[in-house]
Length: 387
Image 1: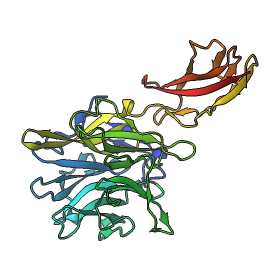
Image 2: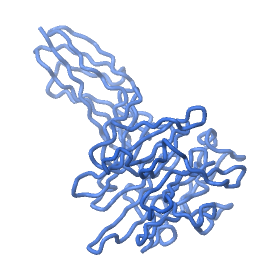
Image 3: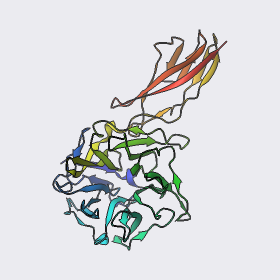
Image 4: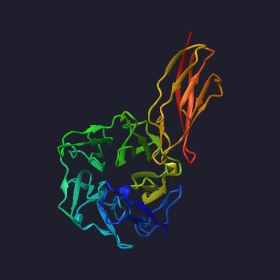
């Protein structure tokens, strides 16, 4: 069993702790590499049982996961807690016993649990978003988060950021598709809902995970008309806009259905649900996990706008030091691929671009950013050369 130590300062703002370090293990499992593995096989991911979504508290000392009955689509949430050096046997989460509930998600402070619950008299076809608070170690009575988050349509897969903004999926637009939304509290109340227009598409988006600091978002989308849901990632740039969603690595996304993402508080591990179908229909659903080395890649944080210059005139441009960023790498190596243009020189130490063009026209300079795991991202900067 591999265990890791989380520095106290890293989680100071998220949890209360009386020691300087916390020993972290994920249910006693050997940590995976860059190829996804079934999580806690035969204990949490049990063959023939349809697990669906997992979440850990920020100190990784509690977990909750769900599974559902494929006959009537009812859901159950299970819970386990680490007591001293051992995890308790996962059992039905008592505060939500006898309810049809799904997709648990602990808040970033570990003091609340978001989940979806079936609406009465809808045959488990419609769900609302609910919140369960833990006060001084005791779970209180659950409360439904009312309109405008929960409506007469289906809302599910809710999660929360540090500032308590709730991100969730809903098919409220009336086109039959699920889209992604968020709502930030105003004086402690959720009064408005915003659709994530830059992420939503003509296909279903759901199964959402938000980074606690809202630096990135991972969600599932039907990648093609023929294929089921795959996992996508989008990053927030310097203007607080979401970048174009990118499909995660092919070792993660397969011909099966990948949904219900969750990332550990240290950004080291991605958990997700893989649903498998065969000729008989819905055959299996397990929780997988994978190291995030190939999940997080450099992204364009502060784009460089097009530049117009004169032919034969040397000019030196400053490139933003935060042109590219990476979630799990403080520094990335930025280079200019300028094989075609010997009049363009880039100094990646000083982040300066020197131009002295000898021809007119519009030219795209290709910059690349590479992280320590050899993940590469390209971006172009247009240079317009005039007489």
